[in-house]
Length: 241
Ligand code: IPE
Ligand code: IPE
Ligand code: MG
Picture (tube, rainbow, N blue to C red):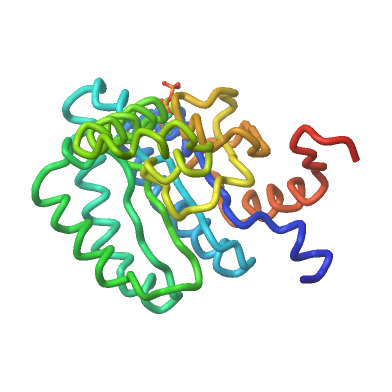
């Protein structure tokens, strides 16, 4: 591994924020900003492939976002379907494995079917794993992990010993991100400096970059600039150098 490679994040995650404000600045409806944001998803996915980032995850819709007006929620879901349909050939060409994580019980049957098809078709691709967090929240993730574990223990009381000696890595296997390395870098656009209930467990030692750029304006140059900034960070994990 070269010095440059060592400084490249394996997993970059983006909280894609600011679509509504971007649209409002143009005197348009909020959903116009969501549509424009799809182009930024395409650009950042390409930039990740080009730079050799192995995992790109995108916070697309939070559990809390279900509380938005019905029209906005509906349009966002329609955009997901359209983007999956449109982008599948490019994902196949670029070796992108597509994964959706979140509370899929809340998604429509047709969207779930589409997601399953897309995940299945791209499952053997290995250049970049593109993860879309949909109907996801960090607290929900930790809760579903705890519930899964409690159910397993109720069915198999002999597991008591192994549960009591469990370490954080073992607990992490119950989270929906099982098998995916924790994000090295989390970028949030639009000037908001908060996690908004995203990857609470997995972000324990992530580096953060907050930029004022609104998501529809965040393109390859912004992505590359964030990688450059990350390469200067000194990650210590609580140790002394
Ligand atoms: C991010 O943009 C997209 C989603 C949360 C679905 P917003 O829709 O939150 O845009 P702002 O923050 O209102 O500008
Ligand atoms: C966070 O953005 C969720 C996504 C980007 C999907 P929000 O716009 O929903 O977050 P808050 O409400 O400003 O914290
Ligand atoms: Mg927002």
